[in-house]
Length: 259
Image 1 (cartoon, rainbow, N blue to C red):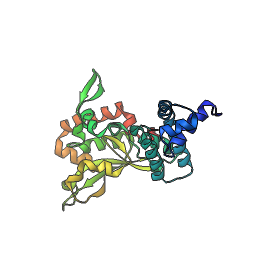
Image 2 (image 1 turned 135 degrees about the vertical axis):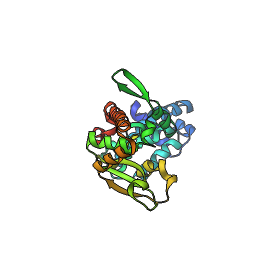
Image 3 (image 1 turned 30 degrees about the vertical axis):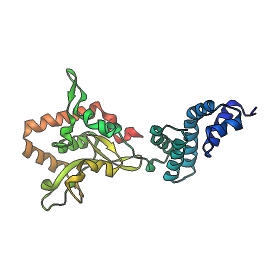
Image 4 (image 1 turned 120 degrees about the vertical axis):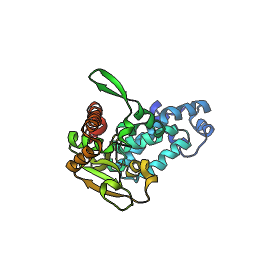
């Protein structure tokens, strides 16, 4: 009989399995059935994967090496495929390697195929209770109003994403948003929340231009432009909706709360 205490034995089983040994080979070495080896790998594999990933992260191993190790855990059924990315994020986070993480908040936390549906029916608190709001209008239509509300409420600067055509800023602006620092990383905030992945942030507009230019926007000039374009009543309506959403979902838009 193997002399390891049970937790140590179980981790030893997983480590042996990760060398490429079959369930049967592991079973013969530990005097256990194939099914019991499979069960141990399923139950104890994720713990070993996280512990190993965290140690590698603390040792400054490249992120890709950690990801490759986790892929090996998945390959030998010691980690569910759907847990690999979460395990990598947890390890990097616990090791303080925030610069290697894509940080997300708000609607970015939903799967891409679910984000739009959630945005189209976002429950927002009003004086009369909760009501559904289609927040996609602030992504395509009045993104400038939301950027202005973020500036007013949280003090963020405002930037415009400009296409590759000639002309003045307002004729070239495809999207307005707010750059924000999150744990030392550069993040980007709009109605979807915050992400530190620029390519991810840009994907919504990728088909609208071959090249992009980013340009700072003066909040007062934006306010005046929106007033002239929309009129006072319409601007006030959309602005109030944006403030209501930011106030009700502050964790989605305040980068300091992601620390």
